[in-house]
Image (cartoon, rainbow, N blue to C red):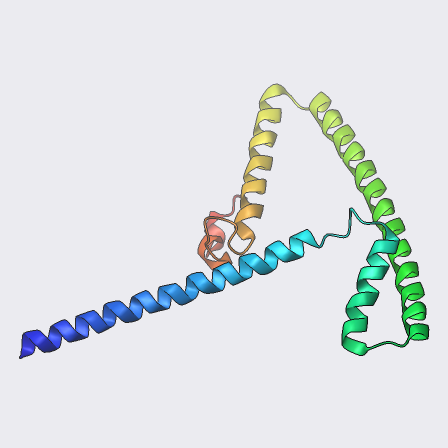
Length: 158
């Protein structure tokens, strides 16, 4: 009797564990699908008219605009899309200038430092990049922030 009861408990435990894993994988696939859809909706490759039309249609489905409202909302959305495009271009220019300035600074540092010091600096920067990736949630083989962050100050070099 004990064997039958223990086997029943064992099988029920295994089936519950399997069921729980199936739910987690289903949640992951739903998240991937959502992420994929969001990824396809990037507005970078669209012109402001397309963006305004898409946003207006989406709002129209929910709010049921009249023709006059639809035209006014489209005009507002078009103006906003043009501003966003101009802002995106400005930010790309600023980013490019920053990269050029940073490269110039690295070159100046290379001229000042010895070969040994340059090697130490390169290693330190590589370590910094590695830690930056590990700080992100799930950034290092699915581990959370608390799994990869040092727990004490003893790990920090002076």
